[in-house]
Length: 74
Image 1: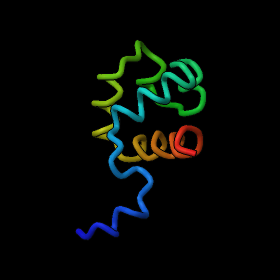
Image 2 (image 1 turned 45 degrees about the horizontal axis):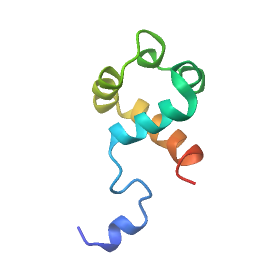
Image 3 (image 1 turned 60 degrees about the vertical axis):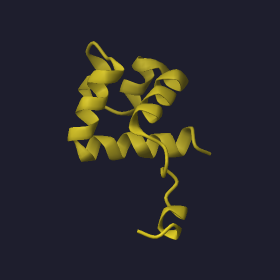
Image 4 (image 1 turned 90 degrees about the vertical axis):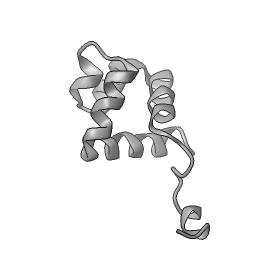
């Protein structure tokens, strides 16, 4: 993979844990659960449980990454 391939990826170099932490800091668990209807945000949420779910569930990870791009990474 060439260096230039990463230039167009706004998430390059940002790991999932950072994304989830930023979103929780910005919105809190309750508002995050309202914005993205994912059970791990609603029922006994924790960073580790959310990371485990998001790493196994591509559609959910995409929603979280998109919210991050729309709100945090302006």
